[in-house]
Image 1: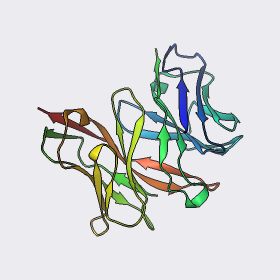
Image 2: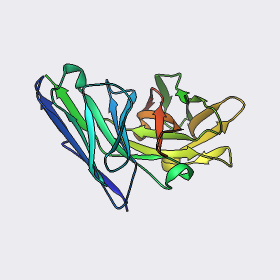
Image 3: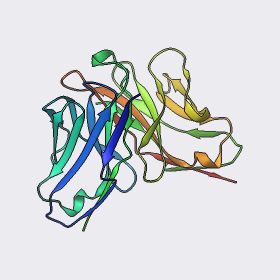
Image 4: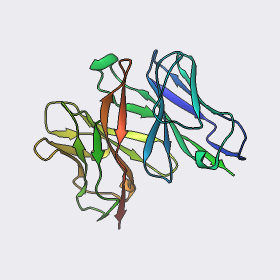
Length: 117
Length: 116
């Protein structure tokens, strides 16, 4: 069966420090991968998605970047964190079916809570 | 762009009573709709989806959702609520993206509180 792992689970970082959040998926190949941010415990905002190695699409301009160095690894990074980067970051992968025929449900990791002080 | 709306920030219901969490959608073409649940400090868990076929979709933990095309709604329901159902519920709609993939656009979430 497929599993998704995110780490670290919690992170407290000073303003201006770098960030690296990692996500890996097991039990599948060539998944579509996603980074969402949830601010204030509510709305989910899509930050990045990737349909393959080295292919990253950004949904919103921001202080963050994403990379996909391997098929099942997705990394969220920042060179210098801002206070506004605080939030709950969720990685997800796309479920059954590939391409335009897939039904598209996403499966989420347990999240990484980032607090920038 | 596709979108979903959840008009209620919070829904309160007594344990044993039926519950409904509302969602309306705005899409071009046939909608692919989803419900997720989130417990505190956890990731989202997939509950159910509507792709095509029967308007009543059954999902995990006794939840079901009714797709209504004329009212553009996809309300989540459960015949008898449990205290353990208390959580944050999200409705979502699928959108295609460049490169052959798709993404989910989520509503703002509805906090469900089930009381004894």
